[in-house]
Length: 185
Image (cartoon, rainbow, N blue to C red; front, top):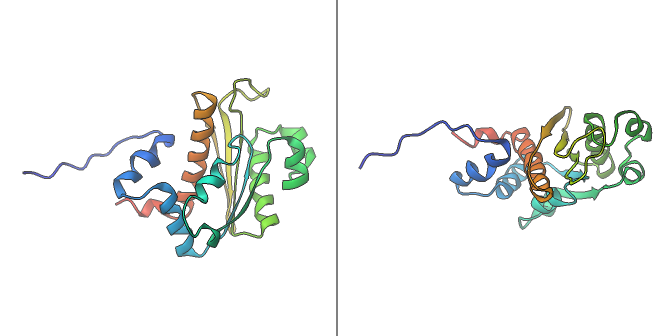
């Protein structure tokens, strides 16, 4: 019997990790744990629309205290300012759903928890928009050792689906940052 042909498949970002990584035989969570442990890196998280989903996924694996230091669920602008350290002027100027706020959240949580990586997500899960941001507008950011990465996403679905997709996208950003792309050959 002939071996099945290897095919190149275009997959949406939110589906990438559940469909492609499952072929490898490890969950996204387990692969992230392996990569963080291998590189001896620590991570902290600041989450708005995801409400703790990213932190939950990062701590799904036994031994996660080796790399996960902590997280802040900062749903309100006041908590973003008081607990995370996002400048109030930045929120006034750009709005809570912006690249600038996501980047500041990632940088500040990294500083506050003294970790190697800060990961952040802010956006609108719905059902109501946060003008001028429509439902589904999401910004994720990662502050690494010396670099800042960010992405703007326009997600669709129910409130729950948007939150799950945003968390998955943030974990995807982390996976790629850690060199996870080399895992798939």
